[in-house]
Length: 269
Image 1: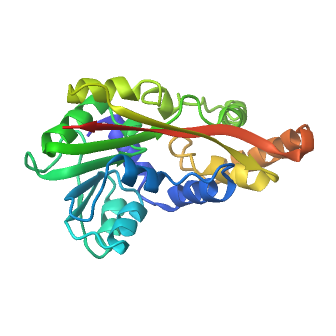
Image 2: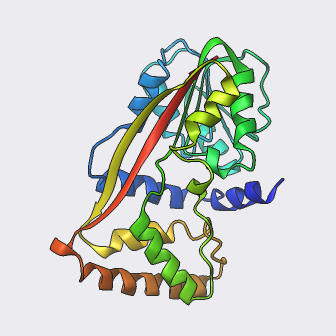
């Protein structure tokens, strides 16, 4: 597999860092957007739709569909063995490990394909979009979610400064590759069925304490190329904590606000 896929595999061998990020968004988001409900609405998902969720992470979205009485087959596909195993435990969900750029499914297998916050992890996002089109039946819907352009600028600046001071250059954010600004064109080229439908949700993370900021940033250590050296990670975490506390002392009202958001793009086969 490619270097990008190997990096993603290392990140998602353990889903606890992903859980930290999910919980941070649930607790500290300024607006109460529900991305899963938005995906259901944008993809017009009904209980009778055979559905493939590519890059399902913890499987929470599929579990929600199953709990709501989805009667058609629900499939999960992730390169992470841990994700595939976790999703396979959800009643009504069939899970497999695989590559989004080479889907192990026949043509016209699904009426809905979803891909949430995963395209930017791939070496060839366009290939994954083409594959989604291949496995959709005529009239099937593809809904994909990515982050807005340049999310979390203040947290990333803090992380860059601390990592650089520890001799670790900050890697380009994955969102530089696929984001809300270029995703509509990528999907339009892959489906060639006219302009896709776009839903944009702008939001922010708002913190009144440095602890969740540090916890969030430590959850992306592997994605940022921080070596799996416990002593080094402990030292960097301590530096992040000190830098975050210093930053909070300069904030008006003691509130840290970091812009974020997501964009959903939906195309019809």
